Image (cartoon, rainbow, N blue to C red; front, side):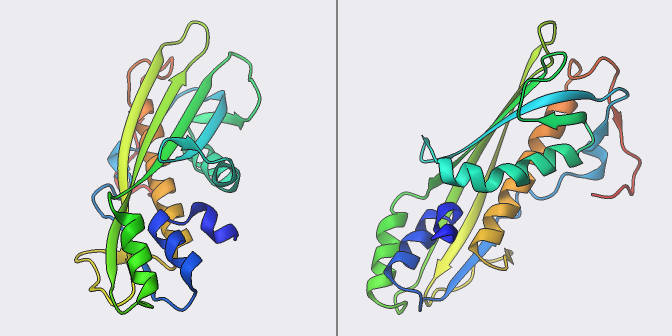
Length: 211
């Protein structure tokens, strides 16, 4: 059952109907990785409290939040923008709140149900959309900064033609985790490029730096 928690909604519906279906997931390439030139650094990283919530169609999804929290924390920590990433309040009062909302394509549930009933003979390819928001406050004297990014995961169930120009994920969960990682990386670096993010100006990483 764990794989159903963060699986795209259409894939989860199909899995409920039977495990014999062909399932493939494709991460949309429009957002992609954060370019090296946009991976900024700060002169004096400060600690931050991280609050993360995953939502499904606008409603809090506690189990998915729990499963993804460590990954999101690792991504924020790996950005190098903060000296410490904690779930508790930190010295200075800096706070980073991130939400990711999974919104399926209209009619996706019906498509998955139909595919399941035909045992995969009537294939379906639909899209799960993800809307991610981040709010950062540097403390009592810091500005409140906002960032938003959007992403998509395309899921194919049954005998359907693969979407063009897509890279297939190893499995649906891997696809979701790739989407989450890319969203969080873009969010934190979007925040860091805003002038009031840190006391010292942010500097672009050298060309060729690891992405």
